[in-house]
Amino acid sequence: MNVNYLSKFMFVNYNDEGFFQTTILLETNNGIIPYNYEKTDFISFYPYLAKQLMDGKTLYVAFDYGYVGIKKSEGPYCERQVFESEYEEKNIDFNELLIRLDDAIKNEKKIQRKLIKIGASYK
Image (tube, helix red, strand yellow):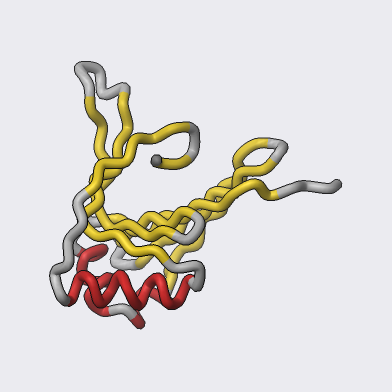
């Protein structure tokens, strides 16, 4: 079976069991394929980012953009899903992206943005 991956989105949270959990959504020609990874440990290399996640924030990565914030619902019937970002960085290299996010959090360089969910991603 030939599957073309159109895009990839990633969410990292700190769960109630005391572990970082990563969810990757692969958007393909055949639909969206979710992958969940329990006990993600790469976040521990970025202490300021890890602290934000432990405080209830979410890391959202789409292509070469990374955001740290909160997923919320809006509207009278909670019909609109949004991601309220406090920190934002862009870099094509994933490790460099996380380093820059960690540094932005450390230096409190906030860039607040509200992303609206369209399909599987926030824009």
